[in-house]
Length: 412
Image (cartoon, rainbow, N blue to C red; front, side, top):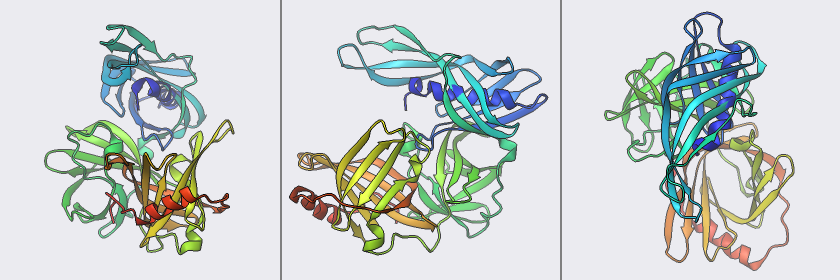
């Protein structure tokens, strides 16, 4: 996600920290927003010196902060600089340098240790080439509403005593970060805990594990990655974790990710139990729902629906099963391209059916298949019976393709 677009979200988080930082000493606060975006922020606030250390999804930096009792504003001594791809005035590709200079945090609700806040990122973009080389454009303002986030005093993180020897957890990744642009490209896998190591499913690789300040630090030899638990939903059992690229004993960048403990109840049941409306758990806190309608005749629809009712987009879909897995194809024009999503069941908790899912994009003319969503943990909530519209021959043809499609690139 582009830094400029995230600026509002970041600003909201910063405000939360400001309103609830301890009056004396240090307090490290984690901020997370919409789970479907996976971005996160962590700020170590030093109340005595009015200094702070910020870590976000692209970098980290130090600065000083002010607080007027309503809004806390962190100003970085050196901007956190990244680049992003965009288009110039002629519609041609160009790049921009993005400099994050400030983060503002506005408290919304809650207390000293946890609650809700708005976070705003403030900075500038500089055009590199294109129609306006060198053009500097500011983004973000302390007056912006920002993005609503939840914050947690990192000293109040839940324990991990349940993850003892032999325990399993889905969601960590052993993907080599070389060439990986963002955390959405990390392949989620199931791990089994040993005394001082984790074993990744599929590869069987055993990775040394240390515990540093509540973080599981995994040493892959050429790089280190760390994870820390933020919360466990008492109803769905979805777990919210922070992941980090770990350098010199501390997080260099962070991201949020969903995890879950697998269980033997995993699965969608037989055909009748699969033929339901499934609501994507990753989007339950988003402005837009993501729903799969799976009809008994193997046709269906993928629906994106605004929570405020402002729009409702429907894409034809078909589906089939491959053993315990559910395979869904969706397209507006199957003769040109279509996407195939595979759900590999890993746990059931009530109505929440957890999967490791991936989605591939198929281009018919070239025969190419490219990953659109790499394997990730998600859950789907059974929203009841799916009522089909009148079937068409074109949709029935796609249904046969979906049922035959392989579950590509998915951990089994």
